[in-house]
Length: 284
Ligand SMILES: Nc1ncnc2c1ncn2[C@@H]1O[C@H](COP(=O)(O)OP(=O)(O)OP(=O)(O)O)[C@@H](O)[C@H]1O
Ligand SMILES: [Mg+2]
Image (cartoon, rainbow, N blue to C red; front, side, top):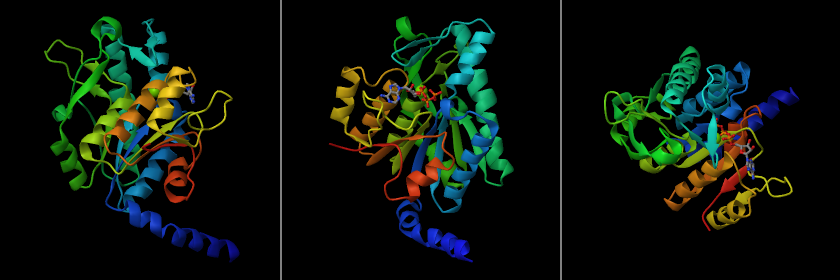
């Protein structure tokens, strides 16, 4: 009986959070690093389904770094990064798209539909949801950056009750162009800015942003982030992530979170508890 009352208590305690988030758009970046096994991926989907049932409007953008790396190695294609951003040759681009759009996006979309929630898997190539240009073709090849987001399509999907699940791929400007591979952190950020999201949450494979001693930093402002980058504390894949967080904050998103997607129900812990988990990025 005691434990049943506890469950009821927990539900009642979540009322203020539900009041805050209901009808709001929350953009969730599901990092490739946090997609470690089938059970974790399915539980992630079910947490988002709960948010959806509570009247929150989630938009999912997924990465796929480890799976892409594995496939590139399998096909003997170069796997190179500069400051945490992937360099994408024409050959690599085909594999990147197969993994992101053909495999990860399909599986995640299926989980939602399997559990009875309408989800639609798309990339920037679908109805030109977003457009891109090369980041720096000499250096990064077909790695792109977003130039424009087609908000009316996204809004239509949300209004019709779909959960959009977005692969970070955009079309090129000719029929023989393989398309652009875009870092999913920056796609999440550009979509959040364009749709005026209430919150952006990045799920990754680490507790949050760590300092030089490996301790979790619970709150960061844009100027702190700049310092940690200059001091070499933030490196690799955390560079595009923190850049995306800062860009969101500078464009008016109130709070951005980096949390550990390996922890079960991490997204619910972040949204429905007072202190949350991980690192929050807030204005100065
Ligand atoms: N100061 C730091 N604090 C925390 N992580 C850091 C830091 N500096 C570098 N990192 C690295 O950043 C990684 C997270 O970025 P990564 O790009 O690997 O994951 P992701 O973005 O979640 O996945 P994907 O790129 O596949 O979507 C961590 O696993 C860690 O190795
Ligand atoms: Mg990354």
